[in-house]
Image (tube, rainbow, N blue to C red; front, side):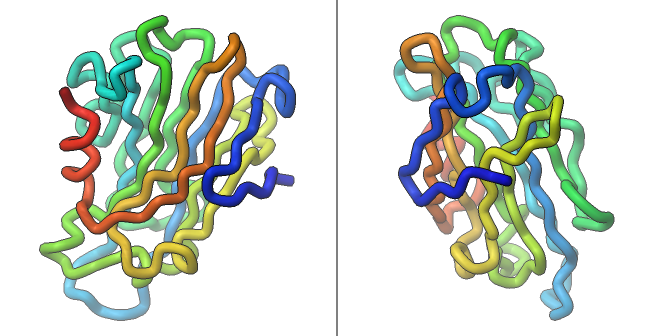
Length: 190
């Protein structure tokens, strides 16, 4: 059972999941019954931040056009354009032991692709969720339902994985925005 977190809640993964080495970030959704004239395409992304809260290089932004981090610690398994199928539609895998020293934090985000052009938001998607889980055991650490909490938003900062005192921790951010993926790029790219 996932640990229930409120916005701002934190988990010390060293204490709660001491054997955790590989983390999965899963995104799932189903097509909407209403017609907006286009498929719903949600995108999972990760920004690998240095101490200055910026990505060290453009390749430290992992998304559908850059599937693997320079150090090989973060891998996006591919872009799902429709949400077809059961379970996670997009997954990003993180090997905690491979993350390079200069990276102090991973920011997990989800956005609605071309939301402005398609006139779409999370409230128009069915069964949308984001979850963080142990890849080895599939034990869920945290999950958010995107439909209820983010009905009008087009971009969500789900949470942050960061290292403190030698232990990986997770902070549930749960902040919604209407700036799309570009808003996060503007914030985290030097």
